[in-house]
Image (cartoon, rainbow, N blue to C red):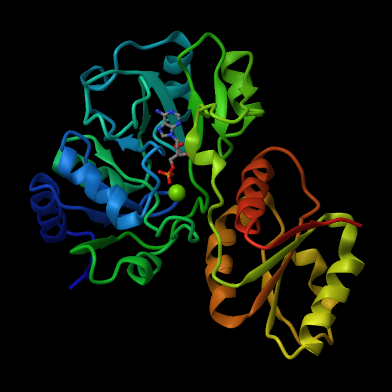
Length: 340
Ligand code: AMP
Ligand code: MG
């Protein structure tokens, strides 16, 4: 049986018992919910990969509380990492440090680095203080499915498979943390998120974005970025912003076939679909709102529609890099990038 418990001294004590005996617990953060396990415990780490169905070359992020001694889990610090911690932590930024043999070898899947994050969510901090070990916590969704932004989403994917989900309310951030490699002189963004390239540049003077062109047999710097991900369990079609009329035609075609259609678009475009019998999913207006709403709406789409027609929002850069990164992967499953 899987319990959902609000965060309280009792539920935190129960979470601690589970984590320190090698189990896994669903935990809230300000980005998405995580599936947490003790980073020092091989069995717990393996269990996380098993229960998620996560490919075993996709490394995990270790979560620590604000006062946890970082030197217990990394080999050495870098000046650029120090500046980024001061500017953005606690918060939705994961830093990749040089690290070998400090936590379970299964955490980093053979890489000589460790990704570390200090979440700002009060419930996550309380939980991490209670257990006082680094907790690996990938997003608490079955591999490839949409990431969870509420305790109920975690329940949908893991009911009966994990003993406890700590309920810390709906996640405000909505998309996963920015992952940034700080092992060299210049920080490199491996996964875009709410802490943007521009924000990192302001602090460190420079910032690169990892965009690999891989040949067969090459290993990506951040393997998780190579997979189809975040996908609702319905057919999907993503249209570029200039292709509104194509998107509308597609909606009409699907409706004519008797299929249920959901349309995911920014608030500004809702009026374009008045009189068309599709379920409208309003992403919102600002980039931050769109990040907050994205996964909730993708989860909704699979419940109400046979096909999701998504339209690229007009805003670009900053947080939209993270939003579009997720939306493109979510729509990789079937037909994509219908151009104008
Ligand atoms: P998730 O846990 O589902 O949010 O995914 C974690 C992301 O962090 C994936 O894209 C991983 O590839 C990436 N990641 C975790 N550890 C490392 C690492 N040591 N080096 C590079 N990327 C990492
Ligand atoms: Mg994930």
